Length: 158
DNA sequence: GCCAACGTTGGC
DNA sequence: GCCAACGTTGGC
Image 1 (cartoon, rainbow, N blue to C red):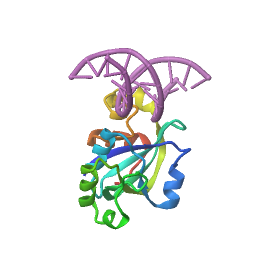
Image 2 (image 1 turned 180 degrees about the vertical axis):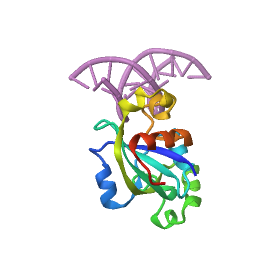
Image 3 (image 1 turned 90 degrees about the vertical axis):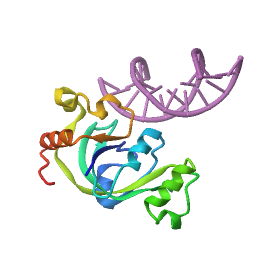
Image 4 (image 1 turned 60 degrees about the horizontal axis):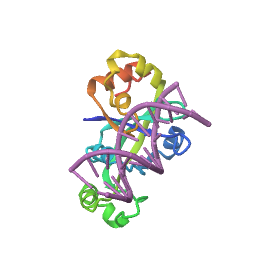
């Protein structure tokens, strides 16, 4: 399984809302590199939920519960019917240059949120994509980095 | 509120 | 196809 990190401004969509909604479509990604990363997400993959701007810390863990499909908030998205077909329709969406989203489910909160400052202060995390490409909202996390960040946050489950 | 990084756009 | 201008993001 692969690991990821997704960012959200808590003003727009916060961890608390993610927990309240349980499953939430991760929409609004309008960057090709981020889109490519989302296309690579598979069922069961996990991602850190990061608060940008306010907080600047990893606040929880989510799981991918639906692979890429056309983003309903995108102007040129396909119909809901074709969207329910799953990743096959995502391919046609990308063919048309449309944007995509995935569904994520809240797994649990970080016992101790991992701040950006703590990440930057740790040499082991110097090449984390979050640090290197601060503007990218969906980034991959290596197995080693995932384990390291889990340790920092006191995350013991899975 | 400012600035750096980076992506996109448009003129040539 | 290059590059300057501009817009957006995100950290400080």
